[in-house]
Image: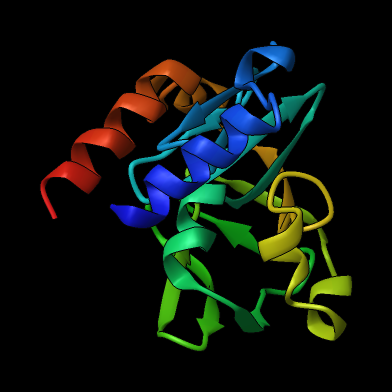
Length: 161
């Protein structure tokens, strides 16, 4: 609580505002939730562009995990199923399975994460993406949350802990 108050007062003193970046909405003032992405309750995000969907873990997830020290990812050419695990993230706190929010064929894996797993912490939505998938059932995207729903979901989840 003291940290939040300090962060809030520091942000006010520095005149930092979330409103200065309209493409971002912030949950808990610390976790970034991007508009235009879809989110799963298991804290993975999906960015669907053309015939490919990029998947990674959310800023909220990496924040709760702490410093990521190892990432286990599948090989390209394999397949993923909605709600099923495709890899794992190991942090200084714990090891967590990563579930796929959609089904499809893995067309690319972010091999840079094996050398620099901390990119998940520093850039979860850009450099820290995990896999790219050719969706086999694009309608599965409709069951995922938008940014506003995901922000509310995270706030409610954090409040219950």
